[in-house]
Image 1 (tube, rainbow, N blue to C red):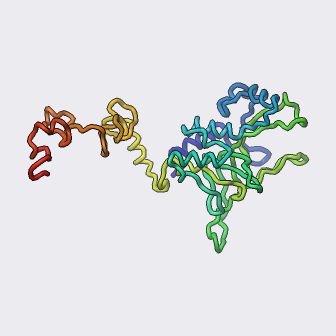
Image 2: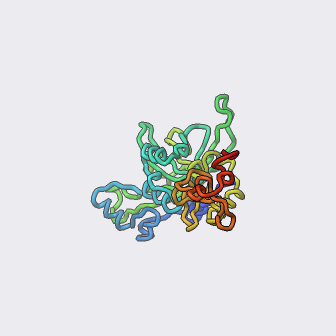
Image 3: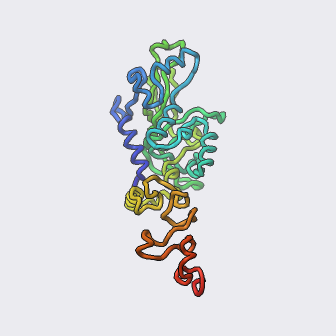
Length: 303
């Protein structure tokens, strides 16, 4: 069963990049800056006019990292650093956040899943691209003595930022940036000089950030939807949650505002919400100095 964050990612991807029949094949709808104009900002934080202005100034920018950074912020609610094209900066950020486990090195035995952020390289080991995994059409597993369960990917659909801007062939005023879904392998129209985007190949990826590992470490396979929903409800109820203060904001139980869960607190309190009704203060509380040590656990047979 898909985790909630993958459900969120899939719903968003399906909304803006739905699968549509095209030339007898399945494709994904795209979004273009020249059509959306100011609304293109939602996908990249840049309008069409801003992109054209950058190109006119000689900036060869493309929109791949702008799109993935925006996806991180708008859809996943995480820092846009994870959407950078440079995997080193992404790994450093994950390490600083205590989430190094979310990085998955690319190899022949595993594949990215829906919503995962993927980092590309070329044969020379240079960073070339960053995009989002939409879904895969899987074939049968390959029999291999060294790797008996190698996934066979028939088609890998990704969602990518890019541009149609290659002066002097195209007029700059007619150029545009795009976010579109690409089936890999992608076969361009005959007679064009567009380079073929290869299919899924572990050798073309540095790796990816797994949404499940980022949000549900250490074992997303043990994710229990009912338990998660119950915990979310508890987190919204200050009287039941170890992570919300009585005023509502989320805080760690060990924090000064925490008060209410197991841990080390800044000040001791009573063992009852109403000490005057139930009478017994916490053994370490100041009030305990003026009570019977046998009752508070500070002396005698309780010591």
